[in-house]
Image (cartoon, rainbow, N blue to C red; front, side, top):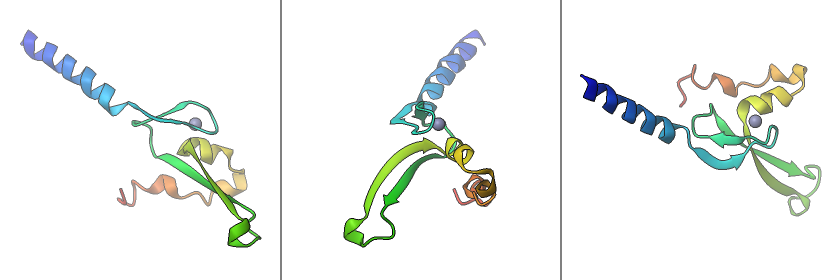
Amino acid sequence: MKLKKILESIWNSITRKIKNKPLGFSCCFCAQSIMSSDKYPADLHITVNIDKTDEQQHDQFFFCHTECFKNKLHSNIQSYFTLEHIDEDNKI
Ligand SMILES: [Zn+2]
């Protein structure tokens, strides 16, 4: 019985580390590492000069926690944010 508990403890420690490893990106809003265990790690795509030609537009990607992104949205805009319902729709 003791051996089983020891093995479970070791297994839980290993799986916790595997489940919670850094993805190698920092959130552009809070500067914290984005971990594999974070809910909905995201990239944020920005295009500038959207009123110009394709050649004049420029794109850049950032990484963020979805929750940090949502919290930075104006309160009037947050109601349009629907990505947090992914689980409910069974899309992932
Ligand atoms: Zn963040």
